[in-house]
Length: 102
Image (cartoon, rainbow, N blue to C red):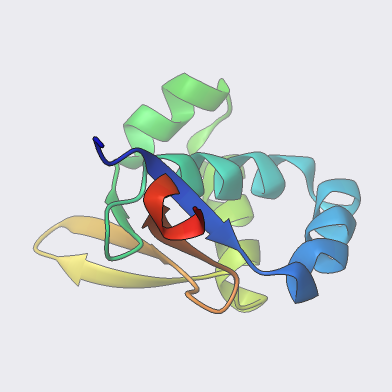
């Protein structure tokens, strides 16, 4: 059977996710984008310019939303040269395959 990409989302964070969706919609949307596109190590390298284009928001607005995610423990950020690597908190969600749930 071919491995199907999936995400393991921990139930104890569902209420926090719901709160995030109400308090900062853009941060919530960005977090879902990170979760959807992260690699097997929960990492995603994406430029601010790309984020601005995808979410149709200004650089400062994207920065504030990402800062909100970082300050509230949803993500951490590593530097790789001039790029940022966004890492989704593995206590919130982790990359998996559908086979792990069967």
